[in-house]
Image (tube, rainbow, N blue to C red; front, side, top):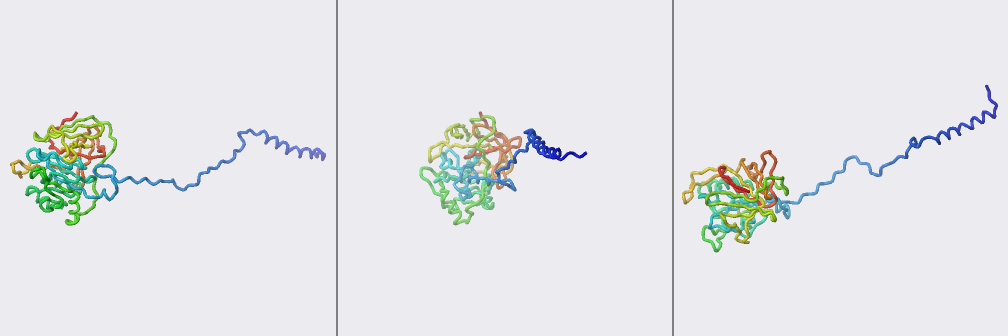
Length: 353
């Protein structure tokens, strides 16, 4: 059927109107939202920030050092006497690390490592002992001492240790006033270092394998006092002082002081190292046998810091100082500061409370 022309025109005019009405009633949720674009720039890879450089730290104390050059300076290991005539010693408070172990006749003797602080003088310097052959190389140290028995001396001379014996290299050593020989041998460490480089051609710098430090400690058993019976002739006590976070030393019932400052000797860390000990055929002038201790290897240890005790083991290599682990294998760390190693035979029992 063919519509009249006017009707056809009316139909065509109505189509746009219907479309317009249909658009007008489309729900709002169906309307297309405007596209949102990010203002962030396009990146092909994740941005990585450089890790801040850690400040140089002294390897034997974990404390801040002035620069990397100072950290690489040579450690000086000094053999120091601890008989009644030797106390009070001079300079022990400035040592980063001190080993104390039995000598002949039940008297202890020290091997003190000086690195971050160099005192004006150290005294009294005495003769070397067999365990020094193991200790000194662990710190790549220059060894300062005054003689030894024939067998020990031969071993030191043939060991390759950078050593500065008083009888052969006297520069830096001198006899001090107010003490009788042989308890009056003093040492100027700075002069000894200069002599070691200028005359003996020893290396001036080296990389020192350090101890492991952490400012915090896991919860452990409290222990504010330590008693170490080295022998009937030498009984040592350490008492923790919370304000200073350090242990104060008492030797044979008396506060152990430094001759220079008059202050009591303290340690941030006190570590008991049990070591296999044997008597050698060699004897001193009084007939007492020379002792040797195994300080390369592994054995039992007790670490005291921050007024707490952590039991475990120590392990030391020929070219590295001891590291410590708990019975579950986790690392035991030291508090940044100085450390005293108390080396005792495996048969010795210590007390603490």
